[in-house]
Length: 168
Image 1 (cartoon, one colour):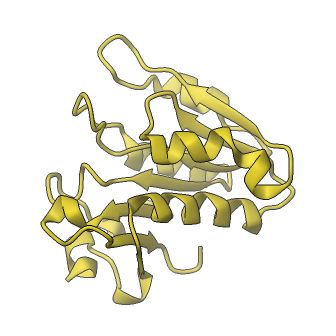
Image 2: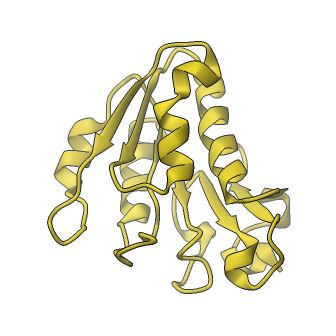
């Protein structure tokens, strides 16, 4: 059912204990996959699950990391030119929420994932606020990782999902 909801294959669905664990697993896995890359990009308005992890990456990994925190415009939207400029050869992963949990602003995550893929960078989206509310079809985008939390879809607390694109 989750795979069908996301337009994904059942083998691409990993159940976790919550959205926070899904976020952490995606970002830390990307860093382990590319140990030579020590740069992470996120927005300044990410959910605390992503913000807190990124603020403590050096402690969690035992390695120094550089984190770029992209600002947003006054209306809460993201400037794609600023995003393009932040992508670098040492960027391992980008993490951007699909829908902001406070403002409802939708970030252009599908376009962001496409731009990241062009540079060989993995892309993660925290879609906790988007799943079930906006159409999502993982077969038609370049997003590598997607996190969601079951309680936002009327499941019990303590259920999360991490979508991991095949061959990621």
